[in-house]
Image (cartoon, rainbow, N blue to C red):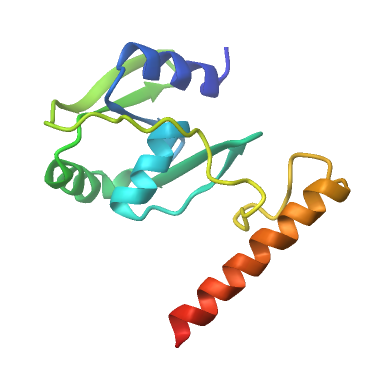
Length: 146
């Protein structure tokens, strides 16, 4: 089983909660949890795997982000994965009044500038959509500057 499969199983088990787990020196959320954390906390979205987003923060920043999560009133659970023991433990859990009802696993991958690569082979149709999105982003940026 891979880390992503473990996270997906935890998301099923903890339905409605934001699921966060460490990966090395960072706590990470993927898919719908990453999208929601991007919206409510402004965490930067990057690519985790094909068309699945992730967000993360350093382990040392756990207290800062749990305080923000509590203020947002969302339910969440944070796990710590010990590679040596091959065990998961719950670091913190909060049953907030709000549930994660996000359905998207990713932002629009053709807009994604974070990872510098595209997962799908670009053809003439994708190229056309990509140009359309880039034009819309450019217009939005120009309107923001005005």
